Image (tube, rainbow, N blue to C red; front, side, top):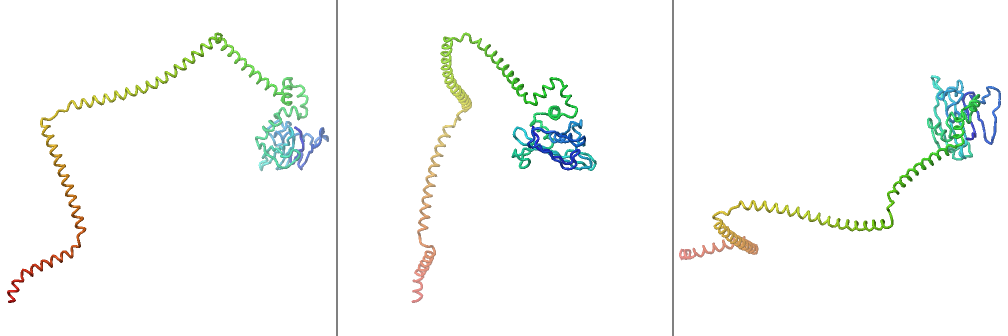
Length: 341
């Protein structure tokens, strides 16, 4: 991690906006009298990344980060990691009850790694900033304070730490833990491969008799069994059809036996012959009646057709009346003639 620009406003001793520009500085030193704010610059850098300062001795306490009688404080750090440029910013607020809290925090990735501001993409916010910074830097807060930002008087503690603890810090700092992971994975694969080799060796012991002749005989046996399996499959299908036919036949036999039992109880009446003669006579009469009905239907149809073809009935009725009047006049004519004479 390489710091590029640190901006502070209302943080600790910096009541007014202050900027520390690390651009182009390979090595630098913060010098000044006691109380000038040298340690506060380092505190601001730690606070921007992890939200806490080692000098406060309490990671949850942030009250010391806000300048006295200031209601709002902001720390913004621009830093580079592996060729990319990031921005970590945190804001402190003082409530009406004089309670100081972190109001907002964010970690952003700048689109242009050569700019100090501009388009960016938010990687984490609020409580997710510190875990993302730990993942990005590869160091938690405690190891960052011990390896990178040593508090005053803490360098001797690092030097006098146990060799195992110092080795863990250096391995994590230099990224050497990847080799431990590789070794663990290689040992795991080696153990698994050894177990598989032992299993395969045990299985191979069971094939000592697998000679060329035995393989040829087994192959012939497999072919014969395959042919037999085909025949058995075909025979099974035929057997299934035959079984279904047997079931159908048994059902038909049972039905026939039931019908035969019913028919066995039927007796022919004594006058069955007379009944049959009467049935035939009735059938003949029915046929004759049907023919008569058909003929009557035909005659009716012809009469209806003739009626429909005949002239209108009115003139015929008038002619009939005229004929009746004529006949009456003719009958009365002799008497009338005698009366006339």
